[in-house]
Image (tube, rainbow, N blue to C red; front, side, top):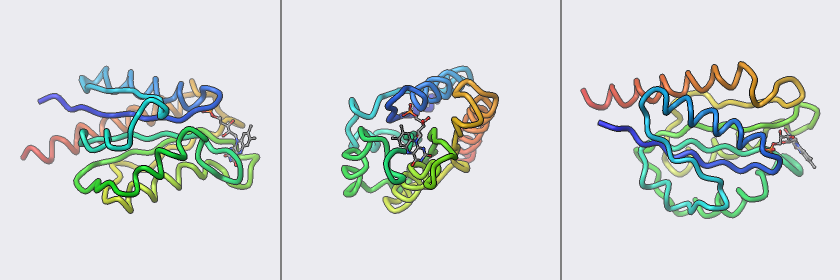
Length: 156
Ligand SMILES: Cc1cc2nc3c(=O)[nH]c(=O)nc-3n(C[C@H](O)[C@H](O)[C@H](O)COP(=O)(O)O)c2cc1C
């Protein structure tokens, strides 16, 4: 059975986008099928077509979502995500008071709409790490393993 995963990211300078690409490649290497979309070309309703969704946003303003993600997040208000497993990531900078707050916003959102997190979220601190850093690849492996194991436990 092929497992299809939707990855949606919002990124102003490309850092969260680069993380999203690394995640997509790592999942594909494990034989999983990924659809990778920039949030400005995605519709919230598309989330309902997948059992696994991965959402990523960088943080701007006073701990806000990346600007392209604002409408998408509001558009999730009426979605019933019950039964869907989610994972959340984002790039931020720990120099700011609201460090990587977009990750907390998206976590809260998917949970309120009924989804469950498949693993703890990932925050990439651009003060300390690069989007190509080891932490990203490590989380990518954890994500792939969590999805494979979750999908396996459902088949039993
Ligand atoms: C005007 C401005 C405001 C920012 N505000 C925050 C913030 O509140 N919290 C945070 O963690 N990072 C903040 N950042 C840092 C970005 O989130 C960080 O540079 C991130 O790597 C950008 O990722 P992106 O290229 O995917 O958009 C801010 C950056 C700028 C330029």
